[in-house]
Image (tube, rainbow, N blue to C red; front, top):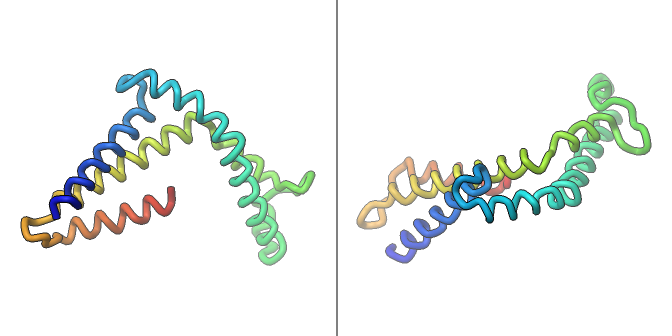
Length: 142
């Protein structure tokens, strides 16, 4: 139990500090600036094409099988639907960095709640179990 509690506390602290550093530059400015310079590449080269491709595929399925909703996707010009281009344009480096920072902070909070729910004999309170489920959903989404 001691090892699990220690590891959970350490990991939750790291998640909290990393999340704070991504959302504000007042914590450790050099690291924040390093990540702020790194996120445009991550956003533009990795996540925008993934989102555009996923939305494009969904629009293709919608246009093929659900005709009344086809208007939402817009016209397919150059093999890409208008909705896919708009969705990928919404993903900016600052939005992505802030969102990831908040996800890390929420994950840390749920880990601390989980840690607080551990009794002296290893008994888990329901709030701790609920926080583990929410943490799992949050991390799967990340």
